[in-house]
Image (tube, rainbow, N blue to C red; front, side, top):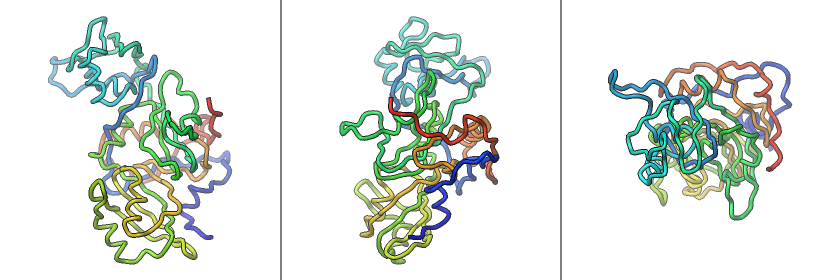
Length: 330
């Protein structure tokens, strides 16, 4: 069966060579943006980034808000951190913290029995790109005991890997992991409408009326949803490939949209999330760590919604950025 070359590059990559690789970052589609987000769990001695200078009246306040620092360190979402502060579970310099407290790297912060360790000045978070195969779950805890993507990742060295968005068990493609709770939040929160692009193989004929409905909006059980863009990309026999774009991450949203038109998705693969694209040389089950330059570009983009990126960002092929097989389960 023939498939569109644009999508085959992400699904069946060639061997990595010694040549300089293209960066996984791509120019954004119209109006993508960053994210505050979801819950993440705790880790002992989690490293927190040094807060940036806050935009507050001169001489008024010091440091950065405590709940924001804890979220950036990967202890949980900002809302979850506020709740723990209200419950008296957070200590600053030996005293119970309160909502509105601000902290600096000079402060000793403790969340339950976990101690917050401040990162060195200008230390960048780590960002991994993983080509998820079908048959893995994006969770640390699965009652059914299915294989988890987290068992495949390298050690985070004193931090915790946070997944930026999810892919269901039968969906493959781009997964992004980071040690920065703030970066994860800014890319995932619905209000920033960061776009996700998918390659979709559909069984059956998609009539023009169905295409129009998917563009204009379809009422699902949890509200109206639509594709920002949908384009047919060819195919053979009963299978047709489509490229779709949406700016939300509701559970199984791509599959449910096609099912609303009595169509079955036989294969689904995420190829881009915001300005991060699945590198062609990254095979299923391999991960790649972003270079510091690419991480800085990603942070800049999420900090400045709509920041222009008119070309693929070049990146040197460094030792830590080469595609590597996943670590054995630990």
